[in-house]
Amino acid sequence: MSDVIVIGGGAAGMLSAALTAERGLGVRLLERGETGHKLRITGKGRCNLTNDCSVREVLENVPRSGKFLTSAMYGFPPSAAMELFEGIGVPLKTERGNRVFPVSDKAGDVVDALRRYMRRAGVEVTRGRVSEILTDGGEVTGVRVGGEVLPCRAAILATGGLSYPLTGSTGDGYDMAKKLGHTIVPCAPSLVPLVADGDSLADCAAMQGLALRNVRVTVFGGGAKPKSKPIFDDFGELLFTHFGVSGPLVLSASAHMRDWASTRYRLHIDMKPALDDATLDARIVRDFQKFQNRDFQNALGELAPRLMIPVIIARSGIPPETKTHSVTREQRQSLLQTLKCFHVDIARPRPIDEAVITSGGVETREVNPTTMESKLIKNLHFAGEILDADAYTGGFNLQIAWATAFAAAKHIL
Image 1 (cartoon, rainbow, N blue to C red):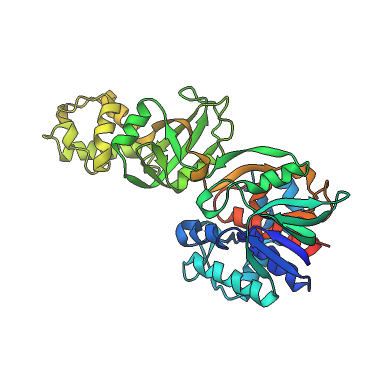
Image 2 (cartoon, rainbow, N blue to C red; image 1 turned 180 degrees about the vertical axis):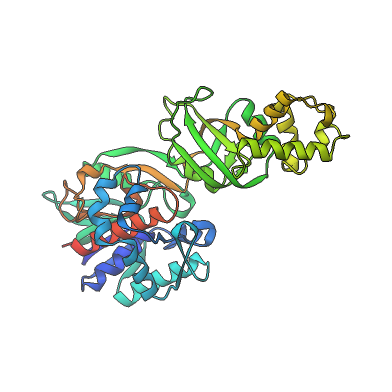
């Protein structure tokens, strides 16, 4: 009989198993596939494992359930996560935006270190799919794996969300929690590419494969008649695809776009964020003087990427054969606005299995925020993405995994 069974071998599951076993408890981790599979592909295989910032800054990057995470985050802040990973053999470095990565740039090094940590702590890792958590009198007594019952005194449910199902995140944990009486907040994709709508879709498809760097993206609700206050505004990189837009900026923006049922969203892309209107207009004038005998369509090579030029021409409304020396001031202003406010109307997010993170999950009001223990079932704890708590990009979601894993491991039994 195990003291504790950890269900799920992802980031939160592996860390909670190792920390619990270090306390001298007998721990078995059950994972249907390979431990650390999703962790191995995070951050494009580099693993942005936390953010080197204060707890307050972490919580500012959690759009929902931040209050619930306060105790756990102070109990295991980013500094503690960095110290732990350095201590188990993962040298770290901090990059732009305080994002923390392994010095090796290999997510596999994080996975391997957590596996070694579990072995040293004495965790027994077993392949198996848990179908049910067994209880008696409102208290955990074991788990069912196929036709076999494995008794235990406590369990940590760390099965993740619905994103990247090929890595094992198939939502089994939600079913187990629901059977025990827990409310599951409907799941939706977060940190996910976006599908363009209407004419924007055709324009994006025409620019498929084009990456824009150092651009500014502002997101408004309200579609073509946006509300006055943007819901997202940042600088970085995006990618045009056959379905719409993707890339780091778009994934970050998607985490702020949560009201798909009643809100239409529009992205405004500033191609020249370092230039104000007057400076950009002067730049356009210089280019047109330089290419004064060319057609308008052949004078934009230094202003925009090749794949984007036909779309910019169409949106500007300037006839492509117009000689640059004949372009009027009004036409020039139309071109300027196209460059400074290139809009993309959004229809919906891509499917949840393409999302980095699942928004939704076990209702946090039914979980003790200090111990991660269920308020409904004694000795059942939660850790990681299965909880209804998600954050923006920058290492904050893995920091949630580490902090909730630590809280569960510290307080179980």
